[in-house]
Length: 413
Ligand code: ATP
Ligand code: MG
Image 1: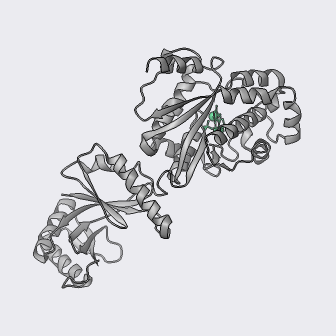
Image 2: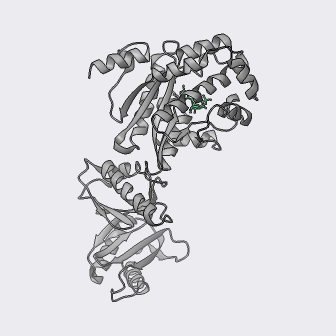
């Protein structure tokens, strides 16, 4: 019964050029995510329609849910600007929707003021017709279970009911580019999704310690980037794989156990900062959440954050784990995130990590390792690879160590 989907845009409190940039990029993303479907996009100034051409609207909605910047959408039937047709079509619409007694209300908006009846008159006319012809209906103007909306426009009359919330936020890319520190866990992919939803185009950085850790743990990261790539411009994201093994071993060897994690994370921040500068990423993004684990107390964050002067965005800082998990499921990352492969943060986890590590102590302990050289080496040997949403890459087919495996894989292309 629906022939189109009405799309309402997000934050239109934006003004002037910001608003036109928002809409331009939103249309670009919509076109991209809808491509391949037999539908058409009809662009208006502050809203849009997807013309279904008979195609399943559920499949279109799946695509719309990949586009940040959509405030909401509604399933719509467009009809001719004729009162008799309106009465017939409104009744068909309701008959198909309603199978049991319910309360309703008709609400009309008249975008085209040349229409002979006022909004109120249209609503009255249609509700009287519906009441007379469908015994299941009762009017309730305050808390109706169903609200039939009628929009009279110059090119036709639009019928719909209900609004489905879209992703909200801003079209991905409008805010600039950031570097997401991506582990194989639950939190960081969700942080990446939230950053993209807020308009940030992301690149990802992963610190891998193969063969100290398994190649499968690096594969998880690739699979998680594929999941996030669905939301990204052109359906792909650049992943920087940093060989972290040498630093990791030096750490395990030279740093007191309780400061292991603190120093390890300081090294990660140092490397991420250099990689971000090289690739012109303006901010770092990560999955830290206040209080979750020892390394995420405020004191710990301060001690770790000391090594960078880049802004660090922590979308999950104040989120509860249950809410993070719900988002992880929603973006379909959860089943990958919970696969049981250890990564560099789970190998040799100290029994009693410092919960209030101090910066001066971290600085002191770090002197035991030649970290400036090790950090630079790690940056130099970083392998960057574009991950598209349909990339077919199984690292374990090519080796046990990520650098080698990627080199072998590249030979096959
Ligand atoms: P996650 O679920 O994202 O792994 P977590 O709760 O396990 O997070 P930590 O292991 O302390 O927390 O890591 C905090 C954040 O540091 C992660 O969310 C991620 O952004 C970053 N991080 C941790 N390990 C790595 C890694 N190997 N490579 C890149 N980033 C990492
Ligand atoms: Mg983790």
